[in-house]
Length: 217
Image (cartoon, one colour):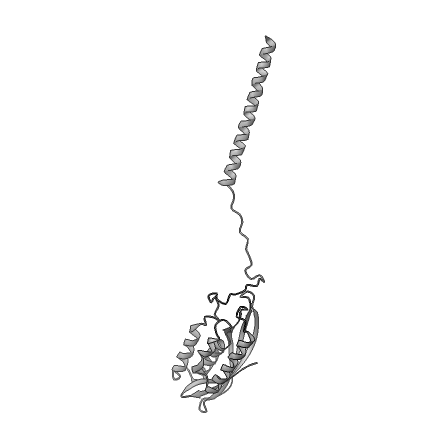
């Protein structure tokens, strides 16, 4: 009888031990579940360099996202305001310089997916001779970048101006515009940046300064 009682006591201890083990496993499982689904720390967001050298092909039907397809209307407004009010507080010389700088930015910015309309919008600020030359220049650009599936664009910003010559009485002058240009070739990331001067020959027609010659140097 004593042996049976001892065996019974041993079985109860084993049962209690297994029950305790199962209870601990259950508690551990609950804690792991709570940690994973409720107390899981938020992942640390890395600072990604968006300027990494990755080519992004632009669809010809994609909406315009750069200043070349949607030329800045402010530039044209500046030109019109300056040309339309030549006798304001600014001198004729300053008026010609402002027109030259604004003209250079718009003249030097275009894309093969915008039908080169920047040039056409400058018609009123060009002499007939320059208009004729620009029409030929547009055709050259269209041939050079005929495949509109390959996005090509250039954006130009005027940095400074220099008056090489100016004669208000004669209505003639030459102004050098230094520019910074960005070339996008089948990508809108990491454009090629270069600097180029634009020599502008200015003449006054009907009391309005116009470009009578444009020469990239």
